[in-house]
Image 1 (tube, rainbow, N blue to C red):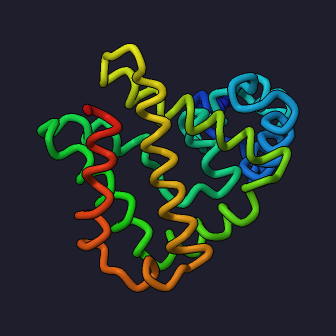
Image 2: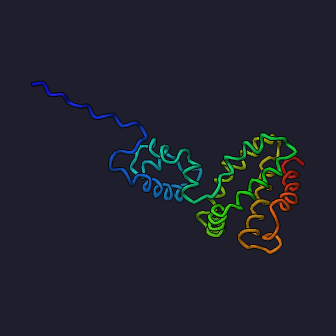
Length: 202
């Protein structure tokens, strides 16, 4: 009698093995430690995978890029780094308006606002998370804006835009200064956009 042995299907690279149901949580825990010790720029997906005891392909399977993993780790409520290419691709004269409208309309969504306020309150002034968030924004957002401008002081221009947006978010949604908290999105876009446009192209 001939016995037929059914071959075990090969596991696709990057897919979790049976019994690895906690892999995602272990990766997140490892990412927190790695980002905390090495900073955003110093942390690598390979090192995070090693800490978690998984293949680096599994990290990419669950989280995609390092920016995606970091955003998940600290609870970033929105991803302006992903929206910026489309914002910058439109007419130059409208970039300031598109940035202001994208940010404000996103923060008017209750879940984004809830997570964003929590992130700002826990991040600002925190010796661990403040530099991490700053490095993430610098690498994934400000540098992309700066490259698109192609001028000598592009980094400063992009950072000035970030400072204007950060101040607006803090005063409207965290401190809730009455005049700003009660203003409409359209009114704020009309007033803030010219400053952003001047920072970028003035």
